[in-house]
Length: 407
View (cartoon, rainbow, N blue to C red):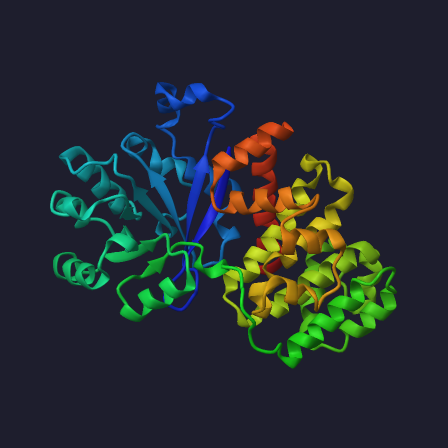
């Protein structure tokens, strides 16, 4: 199985919900599933397996999850299969669910059980035909490129008060800002939030400059543990962040000082955790999803290093993932952003030129988080990597992030 979480943003760049994209079987490795055998899996709601495995508490406490259902799985034991609070789950109907009485009654049953409902894939010519379903659903996913939002807002607010509109494939910041100005959509899905910076931005703030200076100290070859601890001790926010993280890792004793934390972790782990804490602080004025993206990429890259025969470079890959959105964090082109921090030649080559031995791993991670599972499966087949290994690595990264930063 392969699965990833796609964020949905509101008008303030907060993330109140995620949509689960999942693939139960590798269709490239099992071409027979492209035919009628694909129906063998249709009766299972794959999204619930993801939610149950990762635990919905691995998301922020107020986040909800869209879980896709089709014309077959909607009749499965959804009420039993879902171990999460139904109030945090939104069942997303695809276009195979048609506006006939059996489907309408089943959707009413699920709504009575506490689930919210959504629908996607409808053309505007189908809105009248789906009137009875649109009366039930809470969200409708729309292709904003094919929809006049002013007309859509007027239409839906008049006929279906309370129905929230979701814009999909919002892939530029300009599109997002234009759509938010019109105030027609409640949620936005797309790549707009992580578009690489290509033009020179503003100067880096003094606080961020201080964090970058600390980062360069710990990334220097053979830095001293006590020196790093003393430098961190100058910043209260970093001290609190580091001690909180290390205490979560410590089972037997409470860590009360930065030097104690440094001694417990050792040079390799201290370097990783300081970079993590610093990156988190650098992201403090950015959308929260940028922090999450940076840290998840770091942990995911570290976890999958052995499958790409790069186990010895797991620490470097952690940093590569961590810094893969440094251009967005510092609002500068990647090459300029990386010139401010101390990174290896391999990391620089990967993030700036998309070349070198780490580049295939970054490409894999980006394809995975975009749910481009065909490209992911192709890479896995070439390297002999099993679906479950990657899935487990991703779920562990989600769990790690939740444990360290959400609880």
